[in-house]
Picture 1 (spheres, rainbow, N blue to C red):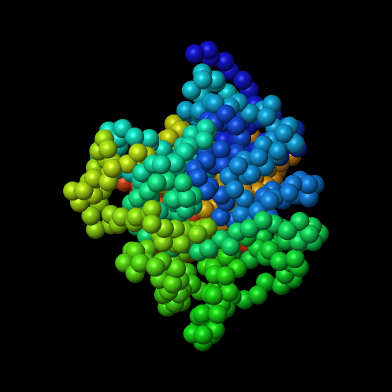
Picture 2 (cartoon, rainbow, N blue to C red):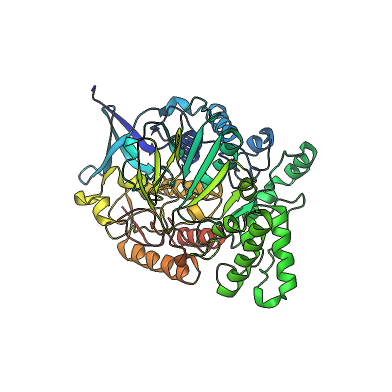
Length: 542
């Protein structure tokens, strides 16, 4: 491989929404930058995840960039929840509108990033033989970008079509006349199952763990309604960024003026609580989890919401045994990522869909012909794996990252990820992580969190440029205190009871530590702003 060395102010890893916005902001500071991207196009998760039914679970008018009022006014979303092709088209539009592609090297995987103590810079190397030297190394690798294969014997033996949801082929896939099996009923599976069922001759759903899902109530966006909404877009964007929630904000024509105190379960009668949940269920979306304000804090409130969803499942699914299997019983609702679906539960009323529970009788093996459960082989033409990701840390730990004095990130994180604000890691100078462990990240509207992180990093770099500083590093004490705080906040909620990928529970051998910050994007933003105002407390410069 040809070897070349280039010099930049910053190297960015990943050309998803975070990487693209970073590049745009770095240019505003007249800093040179290069993005290395493994795919052959922009879009990040929306480039890789092309499985049937893939779409955002955040409303499109909120899941979009706010940094350019011209961009938000000119772009027209077609549906309440944008499908994957449309989000990818939006990402491409952003890259072209802001002329970003000339500084992106596609089909290039970063294999190592080493900090040099003597020259106080980073050396980044790729699988294509590139060698880049940069003052700053910024990881925009995404929280859900490393697919997780199930630990089932014989996957390589299957002789039919084998597809992984997060590595879906770019060419169309047909299920017509086929016996299809799908393993996994997380968000990807719940989105794909209704679409595959419409086409397949028969669909076998192998459910390891039932998950809670709420209806999306998706539909086309009315252009007149959107025009009125966009008149208040700036006020809506402000609401997305504040409060204790996940950053979805209000999506009514008139933006709310005041943040209302959440309605607690103890403050309302059973009938009133049911009415709140019913209204949220009917209006659709993940905001169901905030219909009663303490659903993720109070076991009784959570139980009330769980039982409401159980009733909805039994009302929808005609076969009582299937309905019962679809009711999750091993985790409080919302402590695993709440799924947002289009006709998921209705799909189990189809004659060509079979739900195979593998909770008590796990899949024994994948054979040449299909999936073996409890001695029985379900013969398949196509097998789909929708088994999730090595979340939040997977993409970072597969790169050989070495900080000051050669310390390896994989060693520092051997007992779980440790970070200051999810932005920086002690012992790794001038290295920033976007929506890393210890930030709201996957518990939030990712576009809101991405923009906040990028803006904070750029303010920090601007501060360094103005004051002729060359190195910034998180202090060990600040990192320790932040990790402790993140876990204290998590332990005030029901999240640790979820046994989910939020704790790395879906990855064999991965340390169990609650990774995202559960207090909400508003309080987190206030903390970051206060740290900046206090001279970047917890960071050392020289």
